[in-house]
Structure formats: C-alpha cells, structure tokens
Picture 1: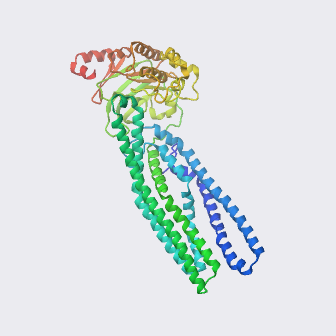
Picture 2: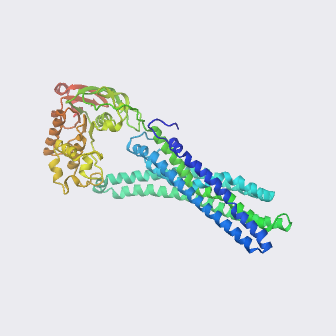
Picture 3: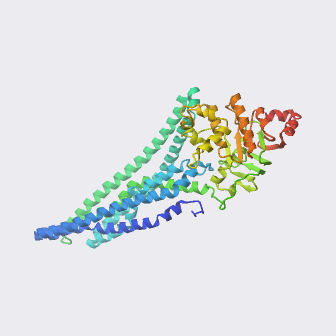
Length: 568
C-alpha cells in the first residue's frame, strides 16, 4: 500500500522500524551461531574429557560455555526487548490514524471490515511482542543446522530434512485449516461487542419495555457462536501443537538410535550422538514454535489486512494552507448526500445561499433527509455530488480540526461524554478557558442550570451524560455547539426535550448567535421554531422542493394543503 502524504499506512509504519528489524536479524544470526556452544561442549566432554579424565579441561570448557551462555542470554533479552519496542513504535505510528478511523464514519460492507481499528492495532502489537517473530527470524537458520548435521554424517542430515518437511507440512496445514475459523471468530467477536455496546447505550429502553431477557439472549447467542468458533480454532491449534511436539521428541530419539548404530559401526563418536540430538532440537525448534504461534500469526495478519483497508478508506487531509476562519457566507450547490455505508443518495438537489447573521429552517416529513442534510453541512457525512462552501471554499479545503472550531452542531440525539460539564462544553480542548466555557453557557442560557448542579461546572456527567436529564443534556449540548462563537451552527430538532422555559432560552440563544454573525440552520418539526429563522428549505422524499424567505415559503405552502401536511 502506498503511503499518502499526511496519511500513515502499515507500510510506512514498517519502514519506520526497518532498522530495528535489521537489528533483530543481526542478533538472530549471532544467537544461532552461539547456540553451537551446547553441541560443541557435549562433544568435547564425551570425546575429550571422559577419555582423558582431565578435570582442568572440563573446568576450562565449563567456564567458556558459561561465558557464551551469559552472552546468549543477553542477546535473547535484547531481541525480546527490541521486538517490544518495534510494537510500541508501530503503535505510535498508527494509533492516531486508528483512533481517527474509529471516530470517522467509513464505508461498511467490505470483506473483513472491522468496527474497531484499535483492537486490530492491539492484536498486531501483541504479536510483535510474542515469540512468533523470534521463530520467524530463526527459520532461515534451519538449513545451517541441517548442514552441520550432514557434516557429522549424511544420514543425520537426511533424517532431519525429512523431519523438517513433515513439520513444515503440519504448519501449512494449520495455515489452511485455521484461516477461515480465525476470520469467522474475529467477525463474531466484533458482532458480540456491537450488541453489548448497543445494549449499554439503550439500557433504559431495554429495561422499561421488558427487553432484558430477549436482548440478553441475543448477546448470549452471539457469545456462544464466538466461543464455539474459538474452541474450534483452539482444538485445531492444540492438535497441531501436540503432533509437532511429539514428532520432534520422537525424531530426537530416532537421531540417538541412528547415532548409536553409527557408533556401533565405528562411523562416528559417542560425542557426535549427543551433539546431533541437540542440533536436531535446535533445527526443528523454530518450526515447532512457528506452528504453536500460527494462530496468533493468522490473527495478526487478518488484523493488519483489516487495518490497512480501514486506513485506505480514510480521506487524506488535502488542505495544506491554513485558511482564515469563515465569516461571510454558506453556499450549497446541487448537493446530494449518501450515507457512509451506502451508495444511493438520501437527499439530493439541494441548493441554497445564506449570509452572516441569517438563519434557515429545514422542514419536511420524517425520514425525508433533513438530518442527513445537517450531517453533510457540518462535514460528518461525505458529499456524493455538488458542493458545500463556506466563504467560497469547499469544506475539504480546511483541515478538520480547523474547520471544527468554526462549526457548532447539536445532533438530534444528544450524547455527552464521560467527563465534567466544563470539559463537554469546551469540547475537551486543552486550550479551552473558563471564560470561553462560561460565555458559551451564558449564550445558551444554561449557566444558572449548571450552577445548580452538585459541583457546578465540575459535575461529572457520566458515560453518555447519564447523570443528567434529557433536557439538561440538550441544553449543555447547545452550549457545546455555541462554544467559541462558531460561524455555522446546525441544530437538529433542538427543542425536542425542552419545556417552555428551555424553548425560550433556545430562541434567545439562536438570536444571540445571529447577532454575533453566525449562520444558523434549524432542523425543525415544531412550527414554533420557525419564528427564529428568516429562510426555509423544504425537503420532500429526499429532494429539496423549495428554498426562499420564510414568509413567502409558508404562504406558498398554505396554497398547497397536501404539501403543507407532508411538510408538517
């Protein structure tokens, strides 16, 4: 996958760790060469010490072997620590785009799609720190050890070559048989998390309507499917691991028996028997370890594939110059909007122009596309056709964070985030000041309400704002939308949870925002919200049917009773 400027990829993350992988390769070479100390030590003990009965020779060999083993231990520790650092560096490179992918609506339905890029990144990082990469780094040294065995006697080399072929065949069989179950298990795990997360967000609805048992069964069914698939994968892995382990032990015993025959025929020495057994274990150990880690390797590879596809779908930041904050106009031309997970447009043929200080109401029947238009205006959903421009520049010409400071958005369903009231109003910005937070709260006429809370602005709202009422969440959400005096404010049914006092405060807030030069878009079902706008957009069946001054549009609708009923 190519690396796009400003768009990190898995390939760029691997490139950033290229030197570290080179270090792993060098350390693996040194480690495998030093591994010869064991068979050489055994040969010297059996063939020289036992025949000469020389204690000084034994002591010298033991001290030399101890020093080499100490160096080997340091190398193994360094290898493991470098792999952990590779995983950390990989995470540093991709964690931010993975988080952004989690926060961005991406097209769904692609094969292997994952709703949790961070979980995929965790899987890759965990594999980097496991014995799997060490086994892969040791695999190229198998021919080296087989060659040494062949030098001892050709029969040793041929026997280990046969054993290696059988173990590699087991590894490839496990690859073929585990690929599909591992993929299904990952998808089932994602389904289970989605169901559990949905239940957390809708706890009140589930409890109030007696859905706990039924929904718990749904989650349990998803959980059972996942555990069954995991058990199937686990059984396959355990089977291959057991076969590989027993086969390696049997082959080592076979090498001892073969060596004994060669000694009897006076074709080799007793020390060679032990050395050949040790070299056989070392030659086959990477294959056995790779077989044991193959399930994790497949999971990491599938995670890398999903993460790569996810990052490919992330729109790159095309803006390089920093534009001035918009302050003059909003222009919509021939706009069509499709959902992130679909192709057919939900709303189309929308064209309108507004200037600073103006407000437009968007009206139409339920399901006509009003909320979709609102999501597109704030850049939350992509534009399928046409343009949305602020001060003549399309939304994509701004960097998302810079544009976000000029936009206020109150969605139809207001959900606050775990943290304090002040943090939510200040959009969790590290540069948010108390003055700006209080100013936004006063603009939304919610300052006194916040002061009445147990800890005022420091009151913790809980996950989803669960400690607050619907009306309180909506009014604090309005303050968040007005924070920083944004130029474009989009309010989707902002009075749905408000009482009369709340609606009066909302009207005052909209008028104050207009006086400060903001353009306000109000998606409304109730006619009483239309008094704060001076223009109207009418949407029917996903298409704009009218745009113009409020009074002119309302008069036209009165002459068309059927259309007036459809628009509410």
